[in-house]
Length: 112
Length: 155
Image (cartoon, rainbow over all chains, first blue to last red; front, side, top):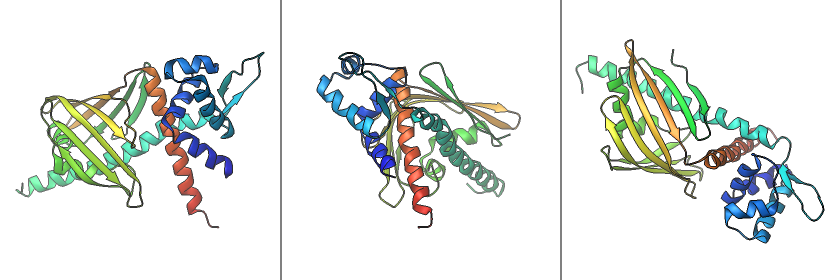
């Protein structure tokens, strides 16, 4: 529960979502992350700390660097996204089917 | 016959197709006429759309706002680019969550399919990173759904 709570608040920030999106492409360093986001390395490090504590990323030590990557399982949640978009669209289009049927019926009744 | 398909295409596109029993004209109208849009473009169960403003002509703007009545709010704004009655609509949209999402260019085509309609919707995000970021947003929503399920579980 605490971990889910931490993950949820970690994801509420657009920069951290963007960092995760970048990490979805592969392991990277703080320096490489800071560049496209036009942020200082300490600022990126603060976001990474939040993501790490939320269990969304893992970091290892390689000399003076601490490259980070998506935690195993984090991507499974991402894979669920298409299914969620599908559910929202399906709910919309099921309602639209019904509306179109009503439009057709009122046309047959000679109404506008 | 009405089943939705949803696929990722290339690095920046999302493609959706859906068949309808109604004519392309009726489906097109339901996508452009304000009072019709407000009846179906509601997203997940339980959400309503108190604000539905749109001006369906090239350059015309739209603003849709949804609420779940429990503090959840979402807005979508955008502009119409092209309208070809009753076969094609191109528009640009962005969500306000309240952070503004990058522009999503949406082309929707309505083709006759027997007595009905084949609708093809192609979303184009500015770049691969944006589409990936959208996936991460979905992740957040997935966790929200999990929370809702947790809330529903008996103590």
